[in-house]
Length: 289
Length: 318
Image 1 (cartoon, chains in turn purple, green):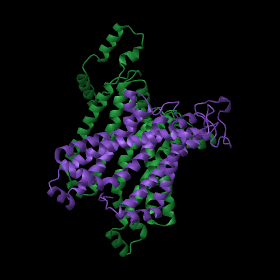
Image 2 (cartoon, chains in turn purple, yellow):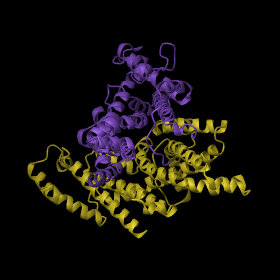
Image 3 (cartoon, one colour):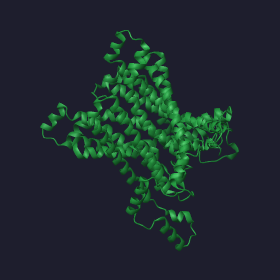
Image 4 (cartoon, one colour):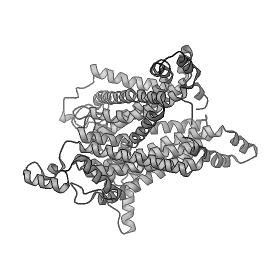
């Protein structure tokens, strides 16, 4: 398990050839791409207007006109899921971006400096790690109240130590290497070396972790909105749809089926993509997995 | 070993102290005066001031922090603003639900994950491996509260084998306790399955790593039965990464109980903290948070110590 996290760059042409033969990567790419496409399409077109309530049509089953049925207010579930995907994706992307944006500079800085700043940062990480994402989210919503932005902050804060650790470990393994020594001998400073040499070499590592954290972010966002702490109605979100479905599960189980499937498929796609990327980007792992 | 232990204990204690500062100060800057919330909007300024004095809210925040942290050290968590009991009593009462739930879930996920992981590793690259790991990949992606809803639909609404939610409480007779246990079955399964999927994947990859080692070949070469090699030699060495993930998972399990207890309306710690946040019962939120954080730190410490016991090399590094 103690793998040297530094990746050896591979030629580009070879990469695309291998990508075509990597099942995880291909399936993951297709699934994630479809979900992203669905979110994009929802900006221009959805089967039904989700702001119009038609109580006469409430809780309809699966039919040709409503392929996933309608909810307790007569809204089309397929349209709700399409619009809800924007919320899931936006929250997860911004949260991962926040984690990377703060975590990577912190981690690479700690690796470059070493000594006391490094120790302090790692201890600080331990403290943040002691608060699971959901618990920090509860604290943040206790202060600012529920909402999509606060969900982003909560999930983002939990991502900071994740990326700080990965970036630090990757950078630490690179610092003693010859090409870094050569750069230092040229008189380049720590910051310049980090930007020019360290970051490009840990980029693939961060990309893989980013994909995995993206999947976790989608799950965390769904959990928060289920508890009523994420996106607020009338903005549709997958977690909230499941909450609404729960009290009606005996009458209309399909209400709980499709939003949950949407979450599971998205997370599965991202995880497969992450696994595939790892196989593709780290040649040493290719034969052991 | 003693130096290692002392260092780890000191780090764990410092982490706990830092967490307590974060918990207290973050929650104390929260808008909304607990005294006003308790009395309602129409309270006269005099009664408000009197209650603030009684609750000690008139003192500066650092003093209140010291007071709170000294209380925690001797097990005095303060008195709830909304329930008419001490935070300690509330926690103890709710632990009667959350602790069995977490223990059952962790046991269940370990019992599923380790055999599945070992099985898949033993058949690496064959159909059985692909199928079990594919199932694990799906299991990781399923949100536990959705899985809980599906379980409710099948086993509570459809088959009527177990209740869909609520908790009758532990009782005197065996029948009472059976009813209470029955109410925990679905929540425990819902918590355990996604965790089991993660653990099975870790177990498999750790086993695959170990199976390539020389001592495994030696054990095979001297004619040891395949099963003994697998379970005695390989699994024992593969347990280190498995243990790490189990430690990390316990934190997720605790957080997971917050959602799962809300799905099943179980009166556990997760539901307590959730309701306390909504009712702005700060002292309860702080107490439960500290308990959760302390548990997580303690578990990680235990995992570190287990490592050092299993692998002496780790005592010397760092």
